[in-house]
Length: 346
View 1 (cartoon, one colour):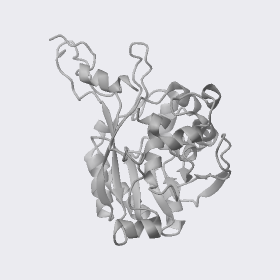
View 2: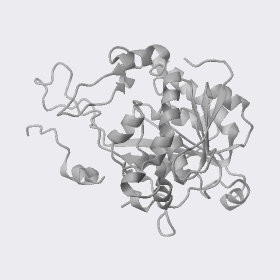
View 3: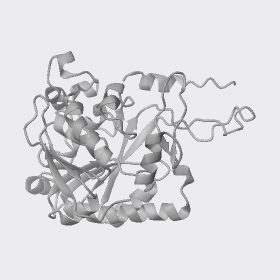
View 4: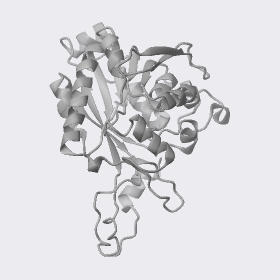
């Protein structure tokens, strides 16, 4: 059969809807200015997350939601300069496809065995610091990569976290599915890697003190917030790629869509109380989502340009309604839309 380049019918139906510094960090407090939000809802920290975690009081963070670096070097100063120039380095800048501009992708397949070991040690060091600041029963939602997730899982388990499952973000992207490079005509029936139709987010939990009910009473953590009385939080979430209006606000290469982020951030605090941390803030999508659902949060970013981007973008992203429209377009606040969550699951 001749390849058509289209996803199978079931997939088409499924997707139719919808180098770190050692200096001490400096905290920059930002007020959330979007409609419906309380003042002083989030703090932004420009600096190194390891230094911040080492200085943070134990048992003071209630959940972590983050999309960390996976090549270690893709967000170093040298590599981000190449990314911003649009050529060279670990970043692959794909060509446009059928009028669609494909987003830059780091080349994880080129990592050496030594770099993979370094990656595992990086996450072990990070998880050891993170588990200290999390309260008992606090969850970690961490974006992973099918090629490297096992390294992250081993590291977090060694640090003492409990593996609690996977959150599958169903999203059809242009990652993978390519024929062999420089031999696409000779091997036209071959796909080097599967076409990506999902993004895995791993779920971990710091062990509870006693029973879950005891932990909920003392620490306000241990479970996940339900969508409603009838609907529990589910581990498969249908998601669109990040919308153009969001990418224009925060043009970070790994920006996640508010439609998805608000769902997992909301679930992270079972009683709606506590502080959400994103130690690898990037363009600020986690902090904006927390702001939209009315949670307190802290974001940390060590790259000065990404930090400046997030600082400007968070109020604007938080002000968007879940479908990507502005509050002026829909005539109601994003806080009201995000709190109900029902529209995100229709």
